[in-house]
Length: 196
View (cartoon, rainbow, N blue to C red):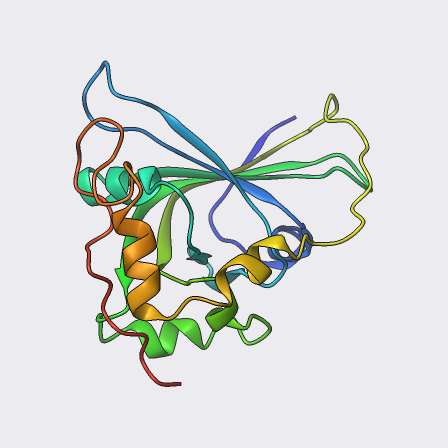
């Protein structure tokens, strides 16, 4: 039923790139820490960088648990599952890191997402994940669901923010600079958005 893959290529890569949603899971090192599971949407906001590396855009939101956990320990699992077509689930278990706007890798990385207007969504980091284990499983119990379209609410909400107002928004949120468990989250104030 399940198979381990050495590389993200061929049908596996096509499957990942074609899904309208995926999920991230992270946790702090503390045994009583808060496990985080997040859905990620917006077509074009994730990319396969090479046969063992994927990345996704981390947009404005009301917390930064994934960033905090990655800064502490780097552990992350990404999961894509088929809600249409043949059943399939793909998981990438690996090590991730948030790349912030002032990182010299930023301009190169953001170039992997040509279909996204990053200024409309309050882009705060690019999460880069290097795979340790790549597995697919059957997904026989995953229901059929229809994808209609991406919601436009996120873009409408954050398109009116500039770097200063976005930093102010984040500063007003309880779990952006620090996680639920008190770990360092998003560095504030945000570095300015690099020119493209």
